Length: 563
Image 1 (cartoon, rainbow, N blue to C red):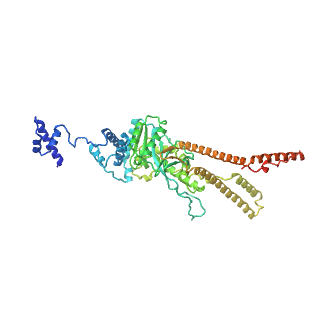
Image 2: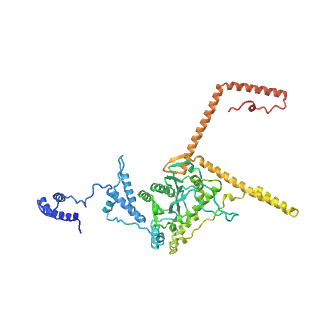
Image 3: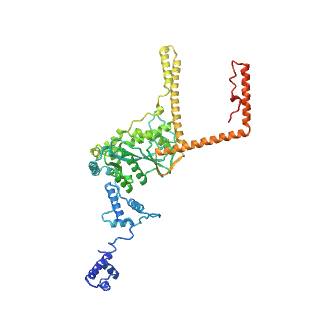
């Protein structure tokens, strides 16, 4: 059933047809005949369009901006990402802000803009995103087959080289929360606990690896408002990118900063014209700026199917689990060496060691191989179905030796062991059991003491390193934003040099003030007279015993200290 407006439009069209056929149309008579407004017929006769067909005068975005927005939605569809309403509204506001030239606040779209935008473009459709069980999503062979087919087509058509296939993902750490570790004990009923203050701060590391086994320096996001000098008092690479956020997680702005970091660190490594960036689209923050930057710098974003990163993402399959393992080991070692608070500073100090043990060429390559990305082999994933993803093979690295188990004081214990061995061989039959027990007990005590001394030395050394890192813990390097480690270290060194110069100046002022005060008190005259007395006593001593002058007569014994 047509609406009231449509019925009126039909009558207006009939009246307009009669008006166009007449030489001098009578708009009033036509309005009475067709029961429509006279001005409405008159405007149509003069060429005015109907309200439904003419462009609205209050549109915020022009045609070019809306075309760019439609293209952005199309890119999200190709990446199999959901174009959420809030994401489209945010992108529209960004376009308005970029085009705004005044000094006042840029305009923003209204509450009904999105619904009107959808009505203006018939090619847009709304659909409700439904939840789906993870097992069904990951075991849908059709979805996975479509992913591999699309991946193969992209690699072949774009001429992507293996070294230009990259995978990026973020891994979160609860800084001071470790895991359960196996121990040895003589008490079978003992409950083993390691005392420490649990730091629950969140730190996010964004890592990127290639199918050739390469990796770049990470982006580290910490929950803070300012950059601290203590964050770079460690051995992290100088091109490590530090960022701060209120919760320690990434956001749209930091995602854009990271893609710039990725481009700068990988463009000299590329062998082809383009780089393929495989990522998990669930939390990728693919804003329009992000995708525009990728397009301008020959980076092809390639999204994984939803909820499939644990079987299709190389970082999740082979890298992040060992990285978590070494993080737990670092907490355990630090706690056993006297660190009662494994905080962000301790975490950053251990991060380079954690990454060096994890980011190995074979480990990275195995992730791409097990996911079937390179060498291209979809069967590596597809043959596992209908088996559950819990049956996927996971390789854990062997537990490392703790630094506290290093052999201790070899000279002393080895020497004592040889002595005990010689005594037992030469005089074993002549010695009483009590003496032999004392000898063996002494060796055991020496070995135990040597272990304790070694552990104490290691703990002391570790504590010294912690003290160095915490000395400048409260020194602020920069407020907000991102900062490379090398830049932060240069800023810290400049501040330290200025502080040392200021300290030297204060010491010199203090010494000069003391000298001036002593001169004012007549100390100079007293000093000259005392030196004359010393010379006179030395001459007298040399006359009385010329062969052996009194060498014990020192000026320090005669004069009080200048301080």
